[in-house]
Amino acid sequence: MWYDNGVKDTQNDNRNDNIDDDDYDTILSEDIDFKGKLSFEKSFLIKGKMEGGIDAQGILLVDTGAEVIADIMADKVIIRGSVTGNVTARRKVEVMLTGKLLGNVHAPEIQMESGCVFNGLCRMEPVER
Image 1: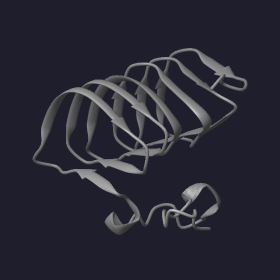
Image 2 (image 1 turned 90 degrees about the vertical axis):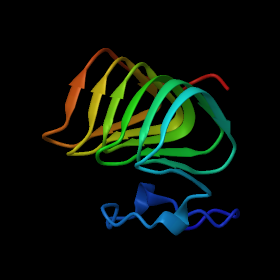
Image 3 (image 1 turned 120 degrees about the vertical axis):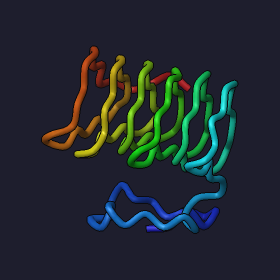
Image 4 (image 1 turned 90 degrees about the horizontal axis):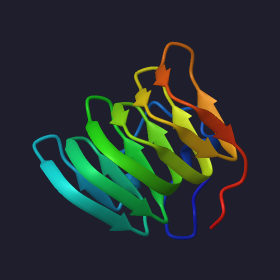
């Protein structure tokens, strides 16, 4: 399924392991170490290191090998790398097999694959916009 803005919705895609960089409007590549606050409206892919805060309207993917130390607020968050901080999503949070989340999670829908790492509190209810 594709959104109107041309971004692929991986929520209903069983081939979720095949992430194409073209599906994301902005990419923080592997060689980037960013410190500060990120704010964005469209999809964002983190492959490098990020420390600070994230406040987003779009989809955030923390890719395998990426390291994020931040509190995150987004529409949907997919974690394949490492996140240290609290994660809040208006739609869904997914922690994949390779994902590691050290922090609390709050979303109406939460999916954690068997084998992922999660240490925190889980609150599964609608998030006020």
